[in-house]
Amino acid sequence: MSPWKKTLIASVLSTVSFTSYADSLPVDDFIAISAYLGGRYSEDFSVDEADQSAEIATSFAQAIALSWYYGRNTEGELLYSNSKQNVTISGENQQTTDLYTSYLHFGGRVNFVDNGPFSTSLGLGVGATFLVPDDSMYDNEIALSGNITGGMRYELNDQWALKADLRFYGTVIKNNSSLFCGDGKCLIQLEGEVYVQTELMAGVEYKF
Image (cartoon, rainbow, N blue to C red; front, side, top):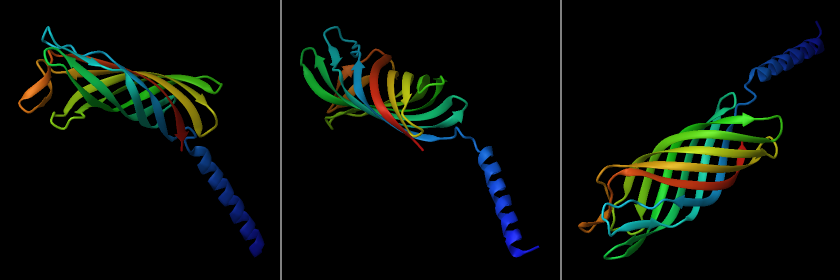
């Protein structure tokens, strides 16, 4: 057999092999990064002293999420969200401080996909809440938390999409807990509760 025929046969076999391999790959396999901006809305802390309350102002929030293909119409998600909020503690000696509240959650989503570019999703996550007062004299707090997310997505092309999420966070506060302690005193004394925050976020997704 002439050399050029051998070369031609080898090229055809290589092309067929590569095509078969490409066809066997999971076409829906992906990794994506999403960045969000929006607002965070908080309920006030319930304090065990009748003459004291802790009011938390609505604030600006930002979040970033890493997601990956898990199964048909499902994806895993690692979420980090942060907001700086103003806390006013009323009572005999009114005080005001800034509080950084961050969530680091691991979870996933189920996507409800139609034939068009628009889809919706429902997600769950669990992880930790980090409460960090702006004043360094007060201690930081870490607590167990979870989230429920409802989302909307509009696909612009194979890589880019617009997203909007409504998230509900619940943080478990231990019974008889004290928050923002330092210099021999604590600003807030809690009876124990599930602390709820809500985020309404919009963002953009880039898929690899």
